[in-house]
Amino acid sequence: MAPLVSIRTTDSKIEIVDQLLLPHVVQYVEIASVHDAHSAIKTMRIRGAPAIASLASLAIGAHVEQALNYGSSSQPVEWMQSTDALRAHVVPLLDFLYTARPTAVNLGAAVARLRLVLDEPGDVHDVAKQFVKEAHAVADEDVGRNKEMSRHGAEWVLEQAGNPEGGVNVLTVCNTGSLATSGYGTALGVITHLYETGKLKRAYFTQSAPYHQGSRLTAMELIALGIPCTMICDTMVGSLFQTHDIHAVVVGADRIARNGDTANKIGTYNAAVLAKYHKIPFATIAPVSTVDLAIPDGTHIPIEHRPAVEATLARGAVYPRTEPVEQAVVQITPDGLGDDMIYNPSFDVTPAELISAVVTERGVHAIRQGFDMKNELQT
Ligand code: MRU
Image (cartoon, rainbow, N blue to C red):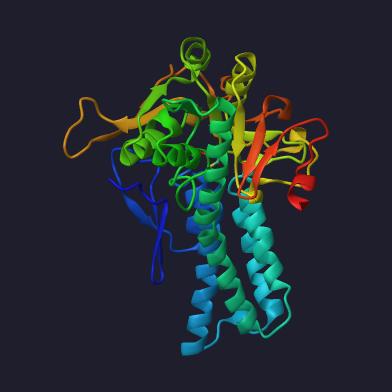
């Protein structure tokens, strides 16, 4: 079974696989407007830092492209009369898209990149065409760079582990594969590369409650790829390290500060603390667009808190499984547990001192005294 794609585009249509329904129901839904994209990102029908940046870019790109096409066939669209009008219309939409999820900086980087196009000199149609091209580039560039960072990351893992005869055991958290990106994945890309080159013994992954990116999405992707894997509950990381030979932990990132502090899925920090205690190398695998050079450290990273209700629910198929699948969302907490009694941050920040290396498409950036991502990316 081929891995699912998070976003598919046909001529003028954008569709996403509804990740709230996975793994039992595979349903693509159309994203017909910027508001559809915002809503899909906010409600986590699509998630994963690179995937949401890709969708936001494609959606705003399609909006501008429609105006370009419409304008040439009949009455020109009002906001296509001048570059000033184009900018005045598009900038608030870009700002709106960035409000959908605050932690993943890839979305902000995509918005900033597209905004720059609007300041370029030229006729409104040329600027609009360039904008559409750039919007597609944000999504298209993702797969190539994922393959690059995955190769660098896999080589790093093997080097750290001393390239053992029977291959390496690697733990990951959350979902960082093709569902979280435009394809191949970041941390899951490292695992895929290790597998494809015959160097992976086994991939371990956490369930990643409460949204269950691990048990619902990573499990699905690993099975589709035929990768030997074992799921653990989030509470079992320490036990796994005590009882198994785990060679490395690889995780994705939603925002990396200049000093290497990294925001990623809630539970990443726990895994990093335990990895440090057990002397297991720990790497963050992410594109350069996940690095936020504007912030010196992780204290400046905005952490998204999800609605309390999301921590009280579990989604899936009614058990035992029926055909066709009966989807269910079940409440797993007592009624008396009010919203004010629930703590539900979506991400935590892992301090750089717990991270051995940040791996990007540019290579391996080993964390050491005085580490600064700005210097790393300049060379
Ligand atoms: O809340 P999510 O599912 O969007 O969180 C996703 C993660 O934390 C991923 O690890 C991160 O975005 C990197 S995806 C390549």
